[in-house]
Image (cartoon, rainbow, N blue to C red):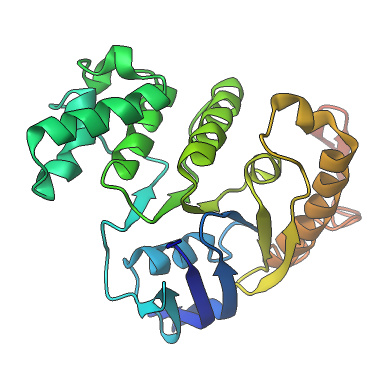
Length: 282
């Protein structure tokens, strides 16, 4: 089975006017073929940079990334990518958007149509195949984006905060749709999110990153059985894991902010905190 990601001692530095910025430091991890792996951590810790290296958009400064034993040398159709922005072609229909990558690969129209309609059916979008993006809701647009990434038959799917712009209810539905599709297709998924509940619900394994420069702090296996159901989010196992991850991410978020939000940090500033948040000056 293909789709194995091996990241070894990865480091990334970016040049800036005030000197080099180290985004990632000595990151090593493996995504096994067919597994669903999420990365969480404080803002600015390098999660998206890590995904962009795997996608082939960013070159590592040190270390290596291997896909099925081969070094990445740029973007590839074998790695489908989904971002938070929908980035659909507004002048193409839903099916036209999904078929675009297949057309670029030289796949004949009959096969393109069958593959596109099969995936749209799996995503619950077949009834909208002839609609244009401006007629779709945000959740539907993102489903089209996911189907378009899957249509060429990639070995893995790389997802960077794909549901971040959606409201809570739509996001929950999209998580269920994604996990259902993944169970059918069983390709490797590397998923970036700020949402701890989302990471738990979707993943086989969760990696927590430190404040910048991003280092992998720990990795935790998710013991919840599959298929995942909405009822699991209130189970004791889910809540225990959620509590552990919240503590881990909070530690790193406080480091990223220089401890500004630590308990007592506002003492002596003459600011009263009440039930409604930041209150009057004392």
